Image (cartoon, rainbow, N blue to C red; front, side, top):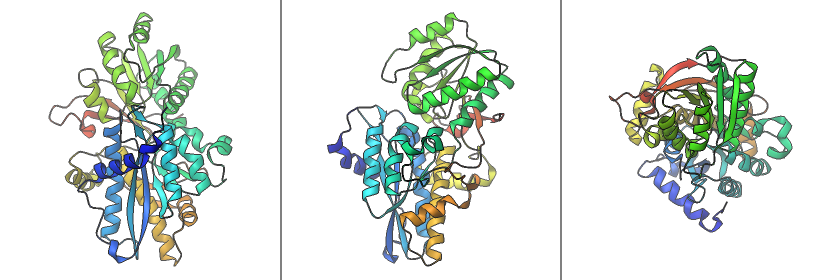
Length: 414
């Protein structure tokens, strides 16, 4: 893939300007020193609409911290970077690596949010580790990045820097396999992935648990996100009379899969992970193709909880779109960073990268999804996986994830 090094700074600046727009991050800058929070998301390409919602959550938390003067003597500023490229058609790990180096080389950046995608996370993690820069991802779920077996690859410094406000695909895939077996009574399933780190890992973990639950795996295919036509794979699945399929991947391939599988197999059970819990499922694939698809997210479902209703209204009034649960997990990740910096400053210490990383590692932070804490590897201690089904509600806008994805419940845990 072309890294577009010469365009990196221009892309990042354009992404920041387009994302923040007229939205103010607060007016406390004159009060003291400036600390930056890096934000890396896939703001170009197939998953850009979802990325924008996630970004908004982080920006809102930063604005609120500045307006309330949460950290005495300091102002927080976002450094928004785009790891999506037109060449890749979406997230680009090479661009993510460039962005990680930009964060590490900027002494004002003391922590970061992101990335959105696990493939980018794998590219960024070793660079951030060497730079001692903690990052909290609101949505990347591949378990390898925080698995101690792969620490030499992804965490060469030896101190965890990759934290999550979601659980991993070690739970998301298997729990959805349990849902297929126990709730949908599926006996046979065909598995697809989109060849990315996230999609392959998710499909692998689903397939392993599905087989353990007694489901017959009818086959496994890998889709090329850049290909236009998946009818060969879909026709093969139809010929096997498969009653269900499971897709591990994001919407680059997902939009085409949803449309084409509906044309050939409109009635079968279809589902995927949080890669299909996306506005692009609703606006890109559309209805009736998206109708009935199941999706999971790797966190509790709270966006429709009455306890966060005021926050949801505030978010929509500021950004003009409804939030999804990963807007909340990004907001929550920002809260963890802000609380860590606040605790350091309150103790009379300087909020260095090392101090912020150490504070995040032992933190217990009240957030919209509840108390967030991490295990010794950086993974969130809450392992909840939530299940949704797409059912169009014409009373609400097509891209309103909160009303078009209907909450089914918590997936059965293994």
